[in-house]
Length: 220
Ligand code: TIU
Image 1 (cartoon, rainbow, N blue to C red):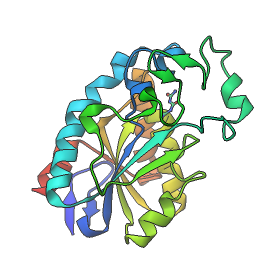
Image 2 (tube, rainbow, N blue to C red; image 1 turned 30 degrees about the vertical axis):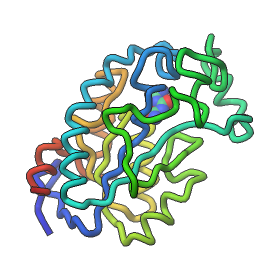
Image 3 (tube, helix red, strand yellow; image 1 turned 180 degrees about the horizontal axis):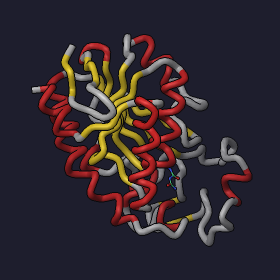
């Protein structure tokens, strides 16, 4: 057990029971022409997460930590896409429509895939999820349970959407989540701040928040 300095108090890190969970670092959210931009967002705001997340990923790989990636997206026939999710916001380019990186948020398309900087390697499961939470309609819980994982070190985008939803789902399933403030990003600076404050408020109602440097220091 290693005490990682965190808010609201130190996180008792147990590397053999921990997984690095990298949420939706996909081209559709991080690069121009994808889903994020189709919703009217400035994707450049998310890109500051890439360098610290890469440093953490390299350290986690070196330390032999379990690493899991997620991707938000849908079947090519869109059978798992709720009509409400497709229609919401009255988008000019909706999920399933052709974009500059293939069909928006559709599995197998270039835009749906993980950015090259953080691309998974052999042995790192990739969870394809149709929703915002990584536990909804996926086998993530089974994979974590079978590996004896009870702690999640969380990176990814966006802070207030898929990261917060997943952390809340994880919390209700009994996992301890440590969210890394420099490795999660939002299109909205105020949601970045509040998304993190909501996790660590009330004595850590959903989990802990720390900079990635604290986890890297614990891994080496
Ligand atoms: N729109 C937005 O902020 N996020 C998403 O739609 N998905 C994720 O956060 N992955």
